[in-house]
Length: 398
Image (cartoon, rainbow, N blue to C red):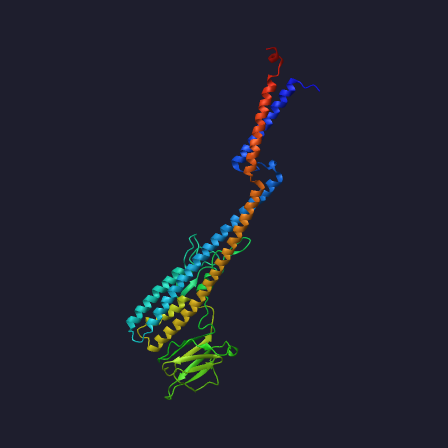
């Protein structure tokens, strides 16, 4: 077969250009560390790498939600912890205010301290989240969630929680109304209280349940009669007389009414009454402190009213503290769940990066070896072309 000189030249040039192109592509790959620089290099691998990249973007989006939720829950947990400390201080102040040797002025000073603690609690309830919202704003309030009105603290936000929607729902806020305004009153089953017009020194404790099956859910009144010299009491149920009428009263002895046991201490006056009503989920720390503050600031309050205010205040503060501790435990559980979600996201992100790396990353050792082979081949082709170029009739004639 006859091969022309021009054909040999063309083949040599094509080989040189092809080898230069391969070397240039190898250099680009070694520079960026990628085996696939365009989809045509490996369509299947490029598709795998793209799917892995999209998965990473989704995981990063979910992680931002996790971080936002964790920040909100951590701030709420901290605020509830601070509220617990404030309530503990309020409890200690109430105990001090119950000192029987205190003058009205000294009790008023304790009431002023309780007022300051109340303001601290309101500030914690209206604490911001640093992003223009409120920790206890419920379903995304843009204004303060709790208002201090003449009738007490009321909710200005919608109750509930905002949820950050991803593959797993995560709380963006906490339900402020449920935490701050919904503790169970009394001892959790019934509420004992003394009438405002009582004239004696008697007061009633928080009481306890002795027989849950006997609880009726009705309201009761224990009315004392001291006109005959020996004190006695009668029990009314929903305003109607019961079989417990004219029962002899012994100071400090338990009074049992339909599964409920209470103690009336001190010396009740004639006609003094004490009520037992079903517990309701509407107790808040502001109401509990307001009631105690009102009595402690009253210079005309007698010993029985002061003792009742202090003991009822302690009962209510304890109930609120227990309620908030449960809420704090819930936020702690949420933080634990968020940590678990965070861990899963990290594992998924690592998997996606591994898949993308396997699909498009370059084996550098293999790439360097290949490049060196290509470089040797290119040099050989270049020398071959130089030899072919000198094979002409003019060179021969010379």
